[in-house]
Image 1 (cartoon, rainbow, N blue to C red):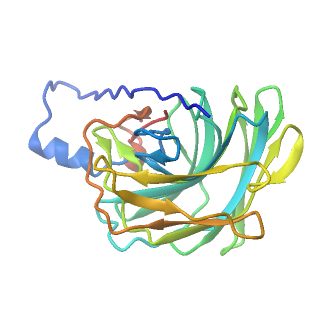
Image 2: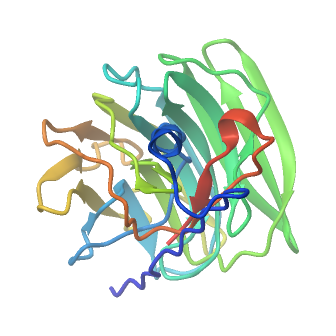
Image 3: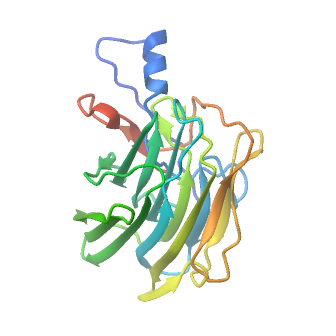
Length: 274
């Protein structure tokens, strides 16, 4: 299968400044964005910022769901990770996605529809919480997001209006990015995705039945940063495990996230895909 990638265009808007000062660079380096698009270095089963499973070119994907435990990173002061499920964004410019983010010691729930910026959710989550996330296309451009914190028994649902190509389905652990590029990936340990299903051509299928393919995250030196396991015998679960390889911040990320408004405190990230 062939994947198309878009080279990211990051724009940094600084009022009254042409060059970033040393302090400004440090501030931005600590302000990551959540997930970003698929960045393949050379082969279809590797990415610079995704690890997980992708189902593509098997038809029309109109829903996706997954459950995972929010990781507890051991080095989250200036590093980040994000876990999510989504539709689109592999062979197309569109992507609707929702998930969890650890960054700078803060853990958040969110959704995003490219090319719009990330939208934080009012549902509180913490490292160690088990969450279940689903995106379902209803009709036209209307989607329903259901986000549940299974640990606290709290949930949040909302309608999202978005035109999708329905071209792929993804279950991903990601290295987030900032307006300066990819952020260092934290040591998230291992994230197990369970209850992973999608609606493909009108039929609900497991991640295994969807024909999804694994993808490992690698650094520019080709070292594996995070590896996806094989799908478990139940057909609905797999694990993404962090390796010991070092992931340094990269100033030129091939991603397409856009930065939020300066008034939006922690969520002032650039957040774009593919």
